[in-house]
Length: 64
View 1: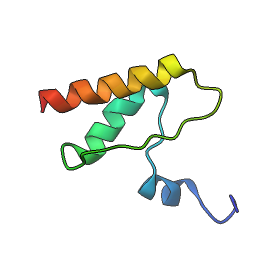
View 2: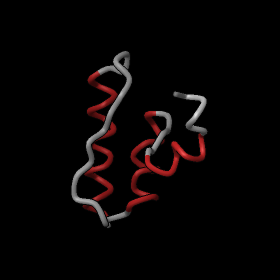
View 3: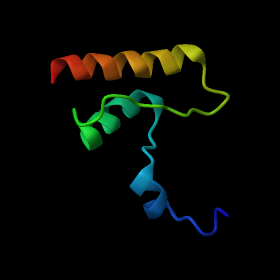
């Protein structure tokens, strides 16, 4: 299946970034037009990292 989906197509419906860049990338793409985000993360990503991304998203939302 991965042969059918190139990076450009995947990028059209998914936001992919390193954890420390993810909140910025989501905010850049969607701004304040979204009310909820359902993040998916690799199973090896720590709960601490996922929580940090969520906090950063919330923080950015209150600044806009």
